[in-house]
Image (cartoon, rainbow, N blue to C red):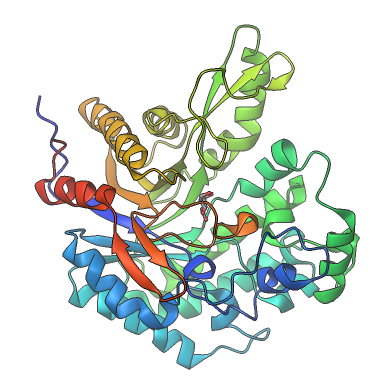
Length: 408
Ligand code: BGC
């Protein structure tokens, strides 16, 4: 068997509006970045000014031989006040889609990637069931305005990440004064503080899944043929001896319920960075001797094969790798990571899995949320003082694979 990918395989990179555009001032994250005692290492600021530099950025991605680009539309810009839509902003995203098409890149557009408008949070955010309908209204509007140019929609990025944050990472809770200050600045109370990332309760999960389902209906009402799906953050969750029951339970809560909710969708987006090991008492520390990335994740490129297989087993819909990558200052390790990851995608294809595309996270070094600009996930470096872009060797390598449409 050769290492060929299917003829119409999508090859691309991914970004998210808040991480690259700059000055997303009407979003909840912008507010949270600037309150006293913020948990953010630094504010997003100008980011990499993708909002203005997208024509050159998209041309660069096309020069590298990709045939697709996954980016997100920013709700906080499109609907700056509840029910008030900005045609100028919708036109901006329409021009982005047009630029993609002119450059031969199919636009894969995410409608929500972590950030939300300030006004939504003051109304109870992602713990308030009314948000589902508001999100669907916004999704319908975006589709009406640019749906004819979009190839595929990802409604919500990583629907399960609030649940992961609550059950795995925020055990002690983030600094209390931060929550108090951010809640006040967003005109809500600490008890009702529910930006997307903080909607980790069962109610938050239900709101997010309802938002996805209602948005899917709104999108299909505008354009029935437009493929729609959600994306899921999936680690390869491995059970160590005695850890099987805990792993199974966690995997059910953190992945399977969301995969089950995607069964009526056109595809599911799988986003994988590493593996997680579980013992009888829960998640374990990284294994001794295994290389760690800037995120303190185990260097585990083959995780993507395992998560694709799991997604296939549970959701039984076509698959897309909507994010895969590594935060590292050593681009040689990034290249090795992509080699290992793509080898495991090839194995999945050989086994008959319907994998439709692969998007590297990320196109550019960008704003890594609370960690600021320190972690570097890009295959293209950005000097933020000059906004100069420089293509890394890993980008050249991925470009060769994409153009050959086979792993060499
Ligand atoms: C998110 C990205 C993030 C990446 C690397 C994913 O969870 O979708 O926004 O930058 O992981 O941490």
